[in-house]
Image (tube, rainbow, N blue to C red; front, side, top):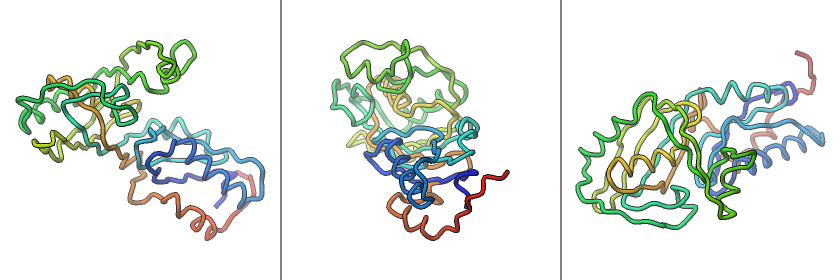
Length: 237
């Protein structure tokens, strides 16, 4: 492998680790293995700390292809808690509002999910990396400031209800979507469409482009995997 010329590494990002921390973990070990102080490494699509799954890393000259990889379709599995919301629409923050769940059935959920298929507009979560006047929205929110984000056009190719527990009011979905889709915002909007509330309790990116979770490296296996690679150092095209 030639990490300077460029390689793609797909890892399964662990729970509660930021995408940047996962990238830094890999970059440090690549630099040690190559005997260099610096190596370009970038990722093609951030995952929230409370999300797991496919994180595509590009090394060396392949960092120029990050935008190309970001355009690729993605798939997720997610579990939603109905009847409540949090400020971030996931479990990073405690519940701030509760709502009735009367009348929420599997049939109604399936009808509501149909509304989200195709090209739709979605307002990103205010606890996100979206920029407002040059500042990250989540930084402003954490400082206690109000943030208003504009809707963005996204595409949801498929959305499927995979389970529903009427006693716990929890539902799980599989989502195939395009670039820029926030599954946390989707959870928020599904809750509203059900005349209730919803937030994520679990999120996993199962595919990013051609890279699937079953083919990803576990982060704790990375050093062993790297030790078994044959390394080339030439930068010739």
